[in-house]
Length: 267
Image (cartoon, rainbow, N blue to C red; front, side, top):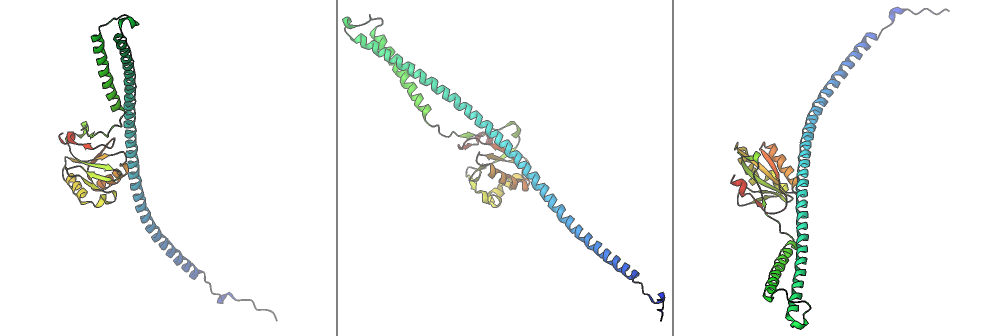
């Protein structure tokens, strides 16, 4: 028997259903992707803004630190120059002392010759004995004075008092001083000094009170007196003052002597 040809009347086409299903899946995928991208973009923008803010603050602090290091290097070079000048002066005084000692020995020799009987003298008397004794006494005084000066030069110099001098750009402001050291900050706005450790800078009531006083006065300004070992403490205190929008400036302090603020307080 021959096979009957297939009739196409009973075929069922699934193409429209699959097309609709594919479109629905595509639309859902697109919606999910869009929502995910929107959420990611919002997060990325916030993080990018935070990064740019931190990077700008870090660049500013690095620039300030480089400027301070340059100022410290210049001051150190000046101190080295002064030390060289003092060393040269010391050598000159030593040479003068040696010269006076030689003159003193020569005068003693002359006096010894004068004390001998006339027949034992090697040279005839050229000066009266009274003049030689006077000359000898003067030489002794000079030797003693120069010896005292030399001993004072050899002593290690005590730390001098550091005087803060007002500058031209600071006229017309009411300064409030805060000293920055490696052990923390010291509030210098009164005779009773208040010391704040680095960890307590942001929560110290005296420091917060001082910042409020400066912020409430248009002519007031917070001046950080930065010791050579207190640069990092200054950076932390400055960031806190900047966050409260308190006007502030800086002034390097060379040496570890006691601060003298009389000249700036009388300005």
